[in-house]
Length: 445
Image 1 (spheres, rainbow, N blue to C red):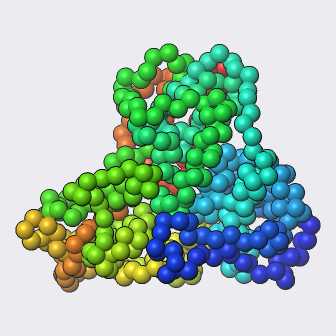
Image 2 (image 1 turned 30 degrees about the vertical axis):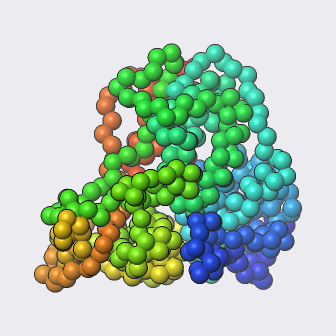
Image 3 (image 1 turned 45 degrees about the vertical axis):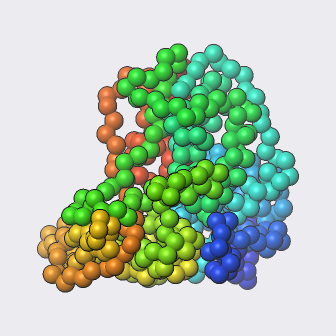
């Protein structure tokens, strides 16, 4: 490394977020950027550990010490080349990945101050686009065709890998534009869609074909292809079928998130179809990232109040002995959306929706306890009998997605990403796509 002791005298510095009162008035990206000098200093903090746990933790196997070293030395092109040896879309992961690499950084263990790997990754990619390091390339064709069903992160990863190997790849998707949940599930304030469009233009120039607004029945796949890859994700959200579910004002999380992204893309909706939180008391059921996205979107709509409840107990703050380093820490996570104004509560189960004149007015919740059996098995939920009503004019269900059941496919049909593993991280979808592309290549050879 250029400065193996930099971590001793250079503190971790994050780019930070835009001021709350400014950012809640629009859907522009929340996260800011550091200047080039400070970004290179942050890269110098990497110690080039003998055993790089950052590399171990990354599903893609990113070689973090290598691109940190190149970045510190000002070799931006070399840094980008190192980064893209393992990651075809670092501009996505550099913005929305929870950074498993940082949680396993040795500086996380020793000083709770890991290298800013994710932000460095995003900065390297932005420099690559800005300086023209990224240009469409053409590849010799091998005469074989592959259909990829689903243009989300897994499908895009499969398509890119196979395209570089010479296959003629066609991406099919039911939506108007590619990206899957990157485009229709993640708010613009976390991932601006211009970032997706910029990369899609490169993929099209490299020969990947996009058949959008095309619904494909996986039981009746289009003819004329040598292999197929199913990358349809987890389309079915987990619902909450309790009394009162039929009341108006209760929505699945993606009802709001997808519609908002489509509105920002220029679409319009009639008033009776609009999912808008303006002036409403919003209750978000579900404590994960999707729930957080609902909070940020509701606040930008002008919600009167936002409350988030979670059936699991509140995780510990800072450190959890049950998930020691270098594991992913199960600790309290406070997102930028939470910081914008939200009441958070835990260990609450929803019993029934309450309404008036066909519209939801609240939810009866009950405190629960999680008891670990004497045999050390999984904790069991036990109701306490302590009930209350949380008033709400809008309820958003953000409880995850159901793992799809796939039929038995012929040998030339592959399944990958969330469609195979169940709902997971974008970085896992990208890693699964690369792995499956190799399997398809081996099969067709």
